[in-house]
Image 1 (cartoon, one colour):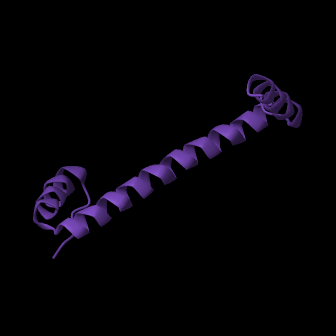
Image 2 (cartoon, rainbow, N blue to C red; image 1 turned 90 degrees about the vertical axis):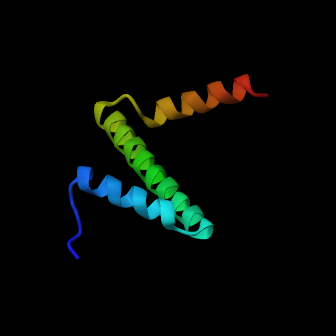
Length: 75
């Protein structure tokens, strides 16, 4: 069996599989997809932080200022 690599081939195959799996497996697939989304978001945050440090927008001082502002607003 050849595994499709293009999205237009994978989508129908995955839809078919989802329609036939058990409820327990469906819950596991959902957890896996949520984990994938979380990893993607965390990578994006990591890149944004790296860029912030590289550009000088994020510094130890700006972090301390942000913490102080937050604490002052949330007594």
